[in-house]
Length: 141
Image 1 (cartoon, helix red, strand yellow):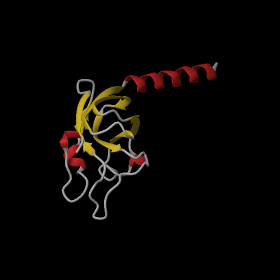
Image 2: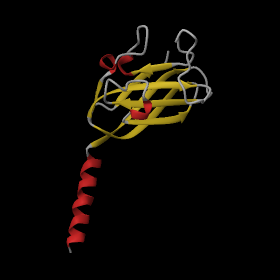
Image 3: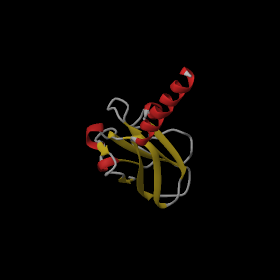
């Protein structure tokens, strides 16, 4: 009997946690080609954004399509995040730069945040994600 009650309590906890998440829709503009993949990562800490994708809350890879893309990401808890998008044209899993560190591949961030002599700052890219705010636009440069 204790096992059944414990199972039911655990099941209720899982459903409660799932009900507190939202699905977000990201429009990615200015995809230059259909080569490679588009990588979208969602971060909740400044120290990881935007380079440490292995520490992101969630990352999604999808085949690139030239022009405008719609990407849906599910299971994000309401809160403050920064979104980073990278067009990995050669599908090598890296953000390629030249000798001087200037990007060779397109990228973008939430709020249109741009870096000055480096990647954009988390504080410039941070957005609120919640039930009433689920649509976001990222323009690749």
